[in-house]
Image (cartoon, rainbow, N blue to C red):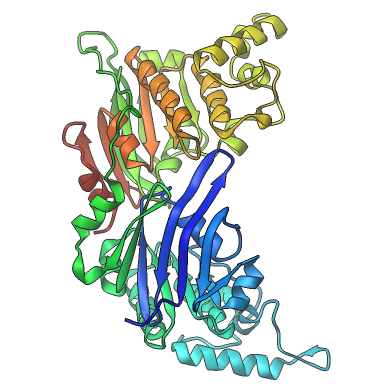
Length: 490
């Protein structure tokens, strides 16, 4: 095998107290497609941003063709011959294909855009890719697959030698995937080095020559796909000791109590997001919902909470839920979960005005008392109730969001990625309070992309794939391999 064209050694990157990459190494070879595999949160997206110049690594070395380099920004990445084809099509619909290919780099003559050269070069690249559309085609008229081809053509215009394909087939049909793979093979055969990121194992084995596996921001394995199989890769992606991270308490028996069923969902659908979702939630139960990005889990949570409306189906509430309500801790805590410029006390007050202002006036003493209670109960590291939420760490911000809903005492708590981007200690604290809350007779719906969290905390697991329930597993029957198979298209 030839020498690697691009080499990453011991790359490190943290955001605040959260480690995204630690001791990451990767080699990309000319004339080869390398599949980058890992769970959601394994560090794949951060690596892409490091390679494209969006983020600067905290340590480590990047070598291009044997020479140490620094990718200062996306423009520098392009100049070095590194391009990214994003899952979201970064194409300007109001421009022609040719204009899209030369955004910010139009050929010029005497200070004016040389439109003839621009169109000739665009036509030549599109012909090389056998794109099936012309340089003057309006980009807005193209399909998603064709817009991906425009992004690839843009990389060829810049004479890129390294192409990163980040989940390029997520929104494509089988026929469109076939066309895209034809182009990928042609790029590989021309000597370019490609990094292919996908959750779909059938695609990985079809198009890639090599693999690299990330887990928790660390490189755990690399090699040739001819020497491995799907089950071995799954074990590499998910294998770890759950340890004390998941203090799951045994569910109490409520079968003899009236109102054991808190929630019944039947045939729930929302066009373009999820369809025919049915399940029940019982008292004392933690129901895990696992799935890959785009599976429809967040959209389902928003419908259950009432942020969005369903097109079809029913949600039947038990008596306790109708009285105490449903709460949602959203995935994006900073824009949806908390008001960052407000104090801890003010954030908790927003969801508890009935108890804090029984006669229409909010009591400052009650507000501060409630905040102090939950600062103590959740071990929120803060100077006091008046500390501004924006000044807290990510883990403590998440605890504030959780506290404002727990203080309201809902019967059903929906948690959407509750430990995303927070440190290990904060994760354990969130898991502890979640388990205790369920065992007190409430119900918890835990949505997570982290398999250990789902396996460690859930009494029962539903798996979603492309907007539908693709599997249901009791706690004792759920394994990393079975959930990942149900979640992927493998």
